[in-house]
Image (cartoon, rainbow, N blue to C red; front, side, top):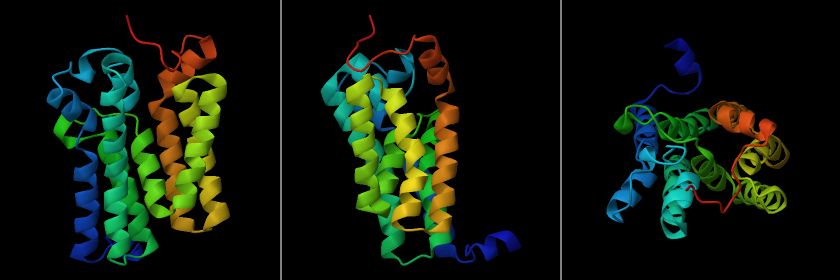
Length: 208
């Protein structure tokens, strides 16, 4: 408990924000979008990942865009609320992390969630629009060159801690971003194997 107090998590407001961030992150935009549009559950087809890329491959652009916006919003909302309430940077970093973890390990889906790219992007946009914009530009440039979503996500995620270091030099946020990057790489380990073997699917290719 002393370690949490040292981080500034010593009041109900901080704990409430962290728990709320996790619960918001646990809401699956992909599952809800596909259900409302009468489409197949994304967990039953393709990569079986409840994320925008799998929705794009199996349900089309409209559903994928809605899913992407929803997943980003899960990162944006908790962080903006925490900033508005004036929490310190330790708590802000934990709120951002909780939203991200909620997407990866959602309590509403038996802790089987997505890979966290869009939610992480939402976190970065809420923390500082310059960081979010830079991450988006890196993703788009990589995608335009290599036409591979996973590689674009990995490169953009790898750059994020350095962007925070350059723009804000805020230690709790740098550490949080570095942990997000490590977890994104872990969640993409099968994609990394496919990239190495040349078997990774390219953007725009639908599953047969």
